[in-house]
Length: 164
Image 1: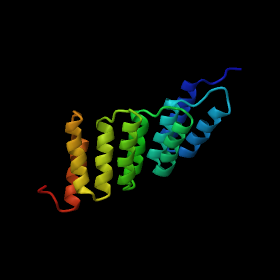
Image 2: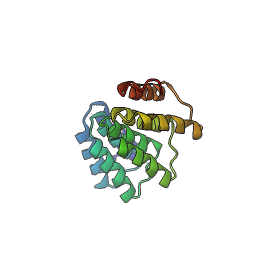
Image 3: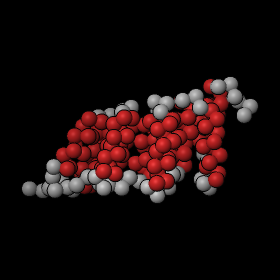
């Protein structure tokens, strides 16, 4: 009998993500813990991404918390996917808190992380915070891109602050 390895588990979890089946992804992640194959950052990221794609922001938050408890180190992808999941539901405060958690975990945010926070602020009608995070990209020497600009502009437009 051939025992699945972390790569095959992660691939299967990613397949559930692509099929928008977050419950299946979580079941498979839990199954890893019952075998000799322990979950790792990649398998957890795949499950978080499945939750993000299926609008399960609370479950994504729980997963990133579980990673820390289970001594699995979240990386930039883990945080960015969770920030994005929260942002889709206007949970801008949680998104900002996750960036702070990245700093405590010594995980560097990237353009995707910042854009996800800006998008969260936009969804929460927090145009001033969106602009603060857009400026923070410069201080962090992270190149802005179309998504970050678009989210910040949209936040200002929603609040009729387009001249900011």
